[in-house]
Image (cartoon, rainbow, N blue to C red; front, side, top):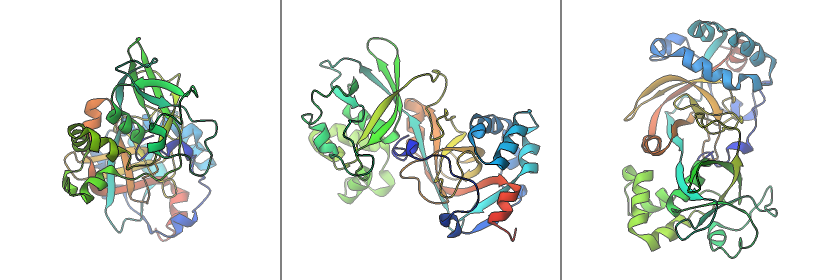
Length: 345
């Protein structure tokens, strides 16, 4: 999906047949459920419902057996406590939690004086692995002219930039209706943070960086702002998303809708997609809740790294943009898998 999830749909399910080399390089420690702060107070039934969204897609027999039991409407908290073990993976340093959301933009299927910033489909000559043209070259327009790759046009280049960072969103069409778009590909250039660039220039302090602060600066400084956006050479192409009901979230890496405040993006080298994950975050909006790993992202790397999905629209975006919190994440694994990773218990 987005900034962090620009590479979301490029990752498939993590094979869960045992530890991989990345896992072998970090510590694994089995905890008791009593060590999970706030565990007893959470809504375990809500987490179980989200787990059921994606567990049928898990290929491993142990996960499939748990999924079959989950479909029988068990009492949620005993289900997790009896059939899983909490495993702290790489917990020597605090976790880093960020947030993401599904933007809503105003747009049109036709280019007009107002709607003149295009969302493009992937070009046919886009290499599957390797570099294509940079953001600056693509946005110049001449490269893309006459190729018929425009999905829609929007009225705000800054919001389009953040749509690319998020990787999916909704376009409210001037003709009526809503168009949903999702990640369709990338030009292969590495993502370069414009927030970090503003800090490097001394424009913002590190503690001041947020999506809202970046938007405000770019709009106050239109010429410099346009150049700043092109400081990030990475460019995301989109695809139209059909068949997802309006009341459901965008599709995550498992090709299922993600759920506000119950779905997270993780690094599947350490956390299996589809696994329940207990999170404990600090910050302005502390959380103690059971999530499900249903998404990935190009900036989500490491055992103690997660992106929390906050929902759709402007308010969700404000909440997500404020999150850069420490804490701890603990993966719930089937008992045999937990003890295979941490044989000492």
